Image (cartoon, rainbow, N blue to C red):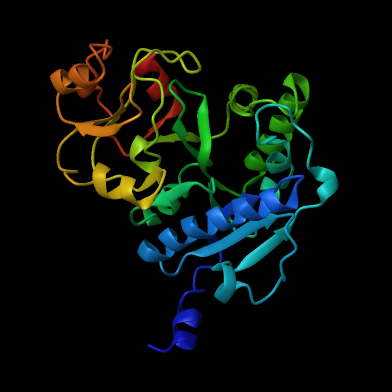
Length: 301
């Protein structure tokens, strides 16, 4: 198949696509984020060659013909005036800008990924699930708090209302502060939204373990996985190590020497984390693909 015919074939589902954000007050830092997103886009193409990709950025890019250079099908320009200064960390990160531009996705079904995520497999099932759900996310420890590094939604009136409610909640709590608590409040204010929790395999990232409240992690940094990881927070080497034996439930962990490891029993977990695996994590039943918010909270509160 020629490159021209391959490109034509790969735009047959224009209603589905992945969205990235790459912005910063400092254009050089924004370019760094954009380069990191390019690596993530390359990983998408490896397993999802026909996936549409859009990037929202304040880096000046041509609005057309960016596929060959950046692997991007569409560009959403972000105005510098919409980017706030933030003292939150050394990089001056803030998420208000993202909340402003989420509604501008060109797709009916959108999956938004942070620039440091690596795709390890086929993402098509997420888009299939969006036919029955309005919003899908990965738990940030306890629901309805989602880790916003991976989000998916369908462009329906309920979601338009969610973005507006999220901005309202962010304005109350602080536009330059963590946006995850404000998103949880937005969901609480809009109970009719059909919200689903994706399995952690859609964002293999070290978060508080079972029994630990979100935002109050203890010494153990672990994640229980059932099945093949589709997306990881980190480089392609994570995909290989996490999926080396995906047929068994396993615990992805980081020890006190900042060494990452995959173990297959509670005993191994305690050995590597100096007996700080305080809960029966290997029995944490997350072999579901997706569960509704209410069922998930009732089961794991």
